[in-house]
Image (cartoon, rainbow over all chains, first blue to last red; front, side, top):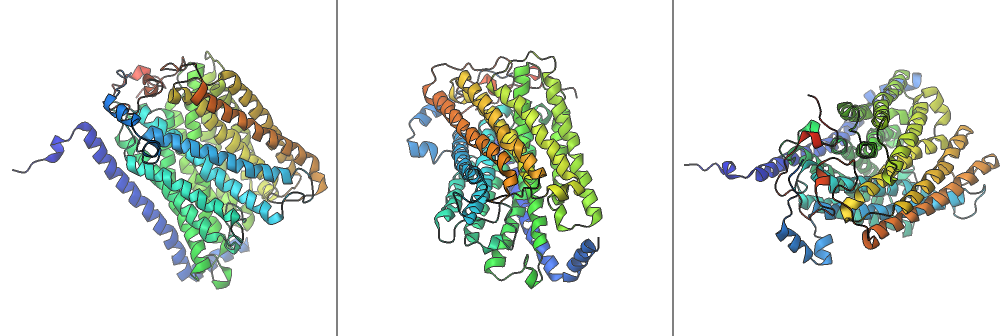
Length: 61
Length: 538
């Protein structure tokens, strides 16, 4: 018979377990934001025509 | 509200047997770590303040008299970095560490060991950054915004970037801890819309931190690779664009402003109801206003860049989006005033600072509205008007709120009352001299004096002299604050009661003063009518 360990947890232990899960999710979000912030600049580096067009539009006004 | 505070005798006995190293360096207790943050923040406040004294001394008269221009630029850069990342942000994290678990009925932060790590990274980060002042080539001098190509010409780029990475990691870990604590560790019955406004303000601030600190880390990483690894993200000669850095930086930088002011809104929303002896007016509106301000903070970043040449449509969008922030901010100001209206008010030191906050922060908000107007901003950009604006927001806003919070909660933390007389002496000196310091800077900016210069036209001499006198006396006034704190912690004979203030409501006031080392080891019972903001209709 499988023992459901979570059924033995106190309310406090459950809260801490959920808190760790929340912390992991939020931590992953932070890493993704870091990667995306550099990634978009890399994308612009490899698509100079898109960047040049944006700059030209800005300067025309 | 809560049953008598749960005092774990065994743990408190254990805590008393710890030596200094174990108690403070290895601590995982939210109260001890909160104290560490606050002490660190106070130290940085005085270091950053001493840099400001150098700036004001040099600007006392036209001409170069005390320091070389490069050193002056180092002082303006370091003053900003130290005050933002070393004084204001750690102070709010310290206040959050101390108060959030007690306000939501949790025994501690959700991740206590990470809490320890997020504090102890900070002294190393700042030791690294401040050490550049003593190294060959000097410290960063390109302004706290670190715009390339100027910033990467400094010899200290690698040190500063690494220091910022460390501060960022510390802030992100702190934010993760706060989110996990608030979302998961609340006592049963402490629903989200029953939490004190200070807790709400920190929850929203923590999400802002998660969204923008990695962006700053990304931006400075790209600076580093541009300098040392031959990339050309921001190097026009290699096909990059320095203006892109400004976009990335301000995508972090503008929410950063709100990271420094939203917890202040939370603090003021705790203090005013206590001393007006009324629940906060419009609790839900206050919470939604904080969330609205946080959302809007992500879509206004380019108002810092009107002068670089944005498309007209972008300028109009960012202008109107910026002006829109005045709406939720106005809701908050009106609600604070409505809370005081008809209240049975008394004017202890925390309330004096809170009222000064409401008035002076609003002045800073109005000058912000002026800066939001594109044609006006072309005139004001990079002048002392901007310096006056953000010092009204950050000194009479964020720092006054931190001081208000310290006076409000220090009797709870230490079990002793501070000297009300000397607290008021500190307040009146601060509020007078801070205006003498910063108000004339509006006139200097409108007359065209640029910021970040060690010398200026003689036409600006009088207002600069007045501003410097205000600066020296405001700086000296903070020694009174230090004296009040030292007296309260070690010498005050007057014991604080558990509730401390007659009008105080909320879980934290049901604990003893000082609170036990481990509070709420058994979850407290929540009674709605005793909540800080009264009963909230669903």
